[in-house]
Length: 503
Ligand code: BES
Ligand code: ZN
Ligand code: ZN
Image (cartoon, rainbow, N blue to C red; front, side):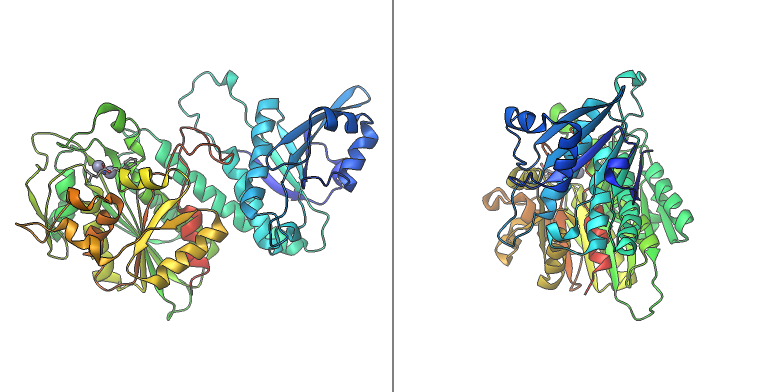
């Protein structure tokens, strides 16, 4: 695994295969640029020829001869400052990640990156260092476990963040927390990227068990037999078509303050979604191993929180099952009874996420009476269509929780967009034969919102926010800290931030 650390050795004395300098647009008269020019007098001519001005995410690689050796420098553009006289932190994240991508294509195995002053983004030093580490580590992530010929793969091995700064302590603290969060993001991504026969409900439960053991967290796991006995008709109903047992995992983090609020994080864990008897067409099924991204985010966030120790209690709940067709599978027309006693008619077995979340949310409400619930689910194609890959859909019954999620999104980088969640949409899931039906009536359209209304039946009056991550969980284009066709780990940074800064 690649390493990321701070270094206080002067930039020009660094031994890395490439030395990276971030530059603001049209501000190429910095000390670092001049230092490179001393070693490479034609620098100005090169800058002109390549028309490099420091536009956001543009790069310029400069080979410099040092005796018989080559030393490479890379300039990475940060663009111009915004109206608040700061570089947007997201632009900064992307610029760092871009440096990693360029390093990969140039086969630089070690980087020394001049860490700019946090003032450039108008943020605190610890947060700045933390975000730097997370962006870099996310860019380094790859999923190459099943590629047997590794000769064409190249991974950057080490990154030093060069800071000759006075606030070394804050930077160090930020790096430490950043590595914890980054490793959790990578854990979630790895789970999501794992093939569905490798990552069954039982395997995912074992990942949670490992997290619990490592961090001394309390864990409770209910298997299919136990869930049937408990009356969890949603998760066991979806699991009926599958040979593998379903699992409900509950991880608990307790802070030292007994009176601290309790947050419940709930994540959809469909380890493969074929649609069930309402089977998906082949191309829509291709990526459905990612349908456990919510559960992975919750488990991975608990791993980080156990180490970061925020001043709130957190319970992470992950219902896990496969959604497969078979002679035993639930059928359209079936009615399920959930853990809280409510019933739903299953009109479409492909709307299964809400069925398993119904039990998990009911369980959270009944056993933890949490001060807030946040759930994450790759719930609807409708949300992915509406918002595309850059924003998770956000809705819920509480402005307070929703506002905190929005705040955490802004600081963590896991972007969200609030959808209207008025009672107007409620009637879409009325059923003539049960308390509700599991798909919205055509007239109402708005599939992401009507799915949210289904979930709302299971949180009672607990303040709650729901995140639909169907579009953001995987294969997000253009953002250099993600990788095409792989998972994003969406939600991990967000959940950690929500818990750490809960008010
Ligand atoms: N897991 C899917 C949603 C999904 C779609 C996630 C695309 C990621 C990418 C979910 O279980 C589903 O199939 N939803 C249906 C609901 C419909 C039947 C009401 C959908 O969105 O088509
Ligand atoms: Zn489905
Ligand atoms: Zn699904």
